[in-house]
Amino acid sequence: MATKKVAPNWSDVKAKLGDFDRAALIGLVHDLYAASKNNQTFLHARFALGDVLKPYNATIDRWLWPDVVKHQDTSVAKAKKAISDYKKAIGQPEGLAELMVFYCELAAGFSNDVGLQDEGYCDALVRMFGQALKTIDALPHHFRSALTARLDAVRNISHNCGYGVGDDMDDLFAEFGFDGRSR
Image 1 (spheres, rainbow, N blue to C red):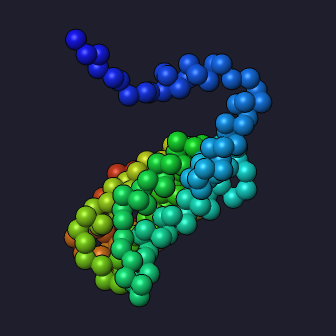
Image 2: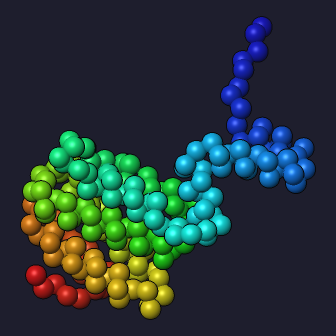
């Protein structure tokens, strides 16, 4: 009877790491750091080195506001992955809220500026808007007002997007108890 090979998993790696001394572990982390830009971004965020949000903002910007002259595409999945990657690296609620609000600003702005009529893109914007409100609602009060004002501006321009985006945002804004239903 043939034995079935099982793919290595985290438990296997963890067991091997137990054999490493401090110098070997630092060497491994160095090699991982050198291996990819994503690893560098992760480690910079984890250790709060430099402008932690900058690379995540750049990714969101690239995928939600592409260069249409260069025929670049949008990718909601890749923009959302930047937020997910940040959450895995450090996940500070204030930074998470900032990235979510930035996502909403770019998605609404791009849709408004180029007249994008993509229902999936708009649905993702509304979902992120709701997630941003939920994240902001959990923050200490001194962080809320500026982020909420930025989302209010997103809500206002989103009435130009179609698909009921602005109306859905009005409902979410009211659901979270924020005022300012003016347009």
